[in-house]
Length: 293
Ligand code: COA
Image 1 (cartoon, protein in one colour):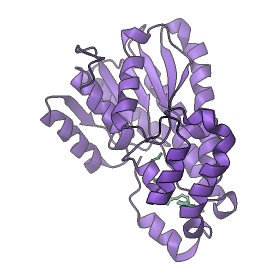
Image 2 (cartoon, rainbow, N blue to C red; image 1 turned 90 degrees about the vertical axis):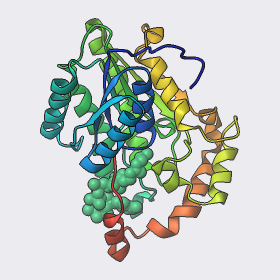
Image 3 (tube, rainbow, N blue to C red; image 1 turned 60 degrees about the vertical axis):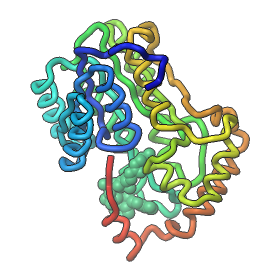
């Protein structure tokens, strides 16, 4: 455990986390639970949420899954309402559900672009909008998970760049609208994070990983725990005057914007051949792949 947080700083709090069944979002859920929060996990796949919740319970935490696709406002509203009924009023919301695949603009259909924008951007709006009525306020806090792509244009990522830039504006706008209610809204923008589905797709080979690492002044990928620690800080009282902020947790990668061509080359090298057609048998295989929030 990081010595920076010595106490159960979220004792008695309730957190709702979309995309909470895996990756960075699950790490955030685990971290919050370690600090005493009850966590409601939202995602598309019940079995995955159940496994994640069971893992948290094994370590003494309190968690439960509430399945919904963040693109479906009504279903999401029901899931959030169920979480509220289960745990009580919600104090913290993390909008982490996201989709990604590397593809050039010409290798992606309008529907491919829309899928990612709908999951990332519309899903974030839907979650904030539907959760607001259940938030305990003042003191409630929302964290939207953004990405470097919001500020670093990256080839093969037009859908993600557009979606995450939108997420950051949702953060700023809602911070403005909901500040008077005492609700804080911030974004975390991770760079390359180890052991995540996103980086497995963007840097699946040792060479690609090396190229990515060259872009990062601190010379390594983040650990999921480092993103979770930032989330813990942001929803704690230590951050109670921070709202509308987009906080990078990227080892300095965003300072390297002039070299985003290198990054684009890395993504192209590993993914270009595989995804350029976006059609046929490969498309069918993709549809059979694990699809997760
Ligand atoms: N290249 C080009 N297009 C792709 C693609 C790829 N690698 N993967 C999916 N698409 C397209 C599909 O072809 C489809 O478009 P079409 O109907 O015109 O053929 C569209 O995207 C929607 O795909 P679908 O299979 O219906 O799934 P979905 O809408 O539920 O979500 C993903 C698709 C890829 C966004 C989602 O499964 C996903 O994000 N998975 C990965 C999870 C991940 O990486 N998480 C970490 C995020 S940082």
